[in-house]
Length: 201
Image: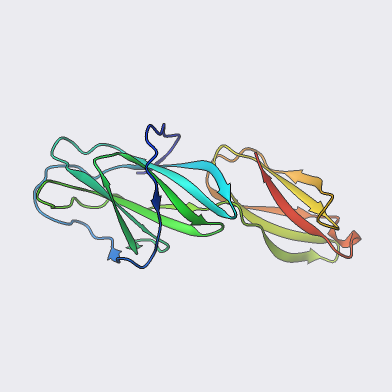
C-alpha cells in the first residue's frame, strides 16, 4: 500500500527522466534470496516549475542491511517502465523533467551486493500539475476546463481578454490528493475572446 505524505529531503540528488533507454515490465519477483521485503514508495510534489517542466520527490522504506542499493523504474504506463535509475543506497530521490499534464508511473526495487534484485514495489502514479485543458462549452454561456492539482496546494483560475490584465474568477480548495479537477466559467459567453491561466499557491 502506498502512502502519500511529505518526505524531508536531506540530499539534492537529481534524476532527469529520459525515456527510451531501457524497458522493463513489472513482475512478481526478480531473483532468489536477499531476504528483504518489498519497498514502500511515497510521493511528494515539490513546487518547482520552469517553463512547464516540473519535479517530484520520491521516497521509500529501507529494506534492511543486506541491501546494496535501489533502482527506481519510471514510465508513462502502469507496470511498463522505460527508464531505470540507480539510486545507490539512498531512500529518497528527486526526479526532474516531468511534463505538465502527463501521468508518470514509478516502482522501486532493492538489490544486494551480488546484483540480485528484490520484487518491485507496487506501482505509484503521479499526474504532473500545470496544464489547463478547455473541455468546451457546457452551454452557450459557459466554458468548462480541467487541470491536475498537487497535494497541499490551491489554485487561482484567472481570466483575461487581452493577456495583459488578469482577473481571478475562482479558486480551488487546498488539494488533499494528486488528481484532475474541474472548473466552469459561467460568464464565458459574455466575451468574444477569453484567455485562462492558473496560479499555484
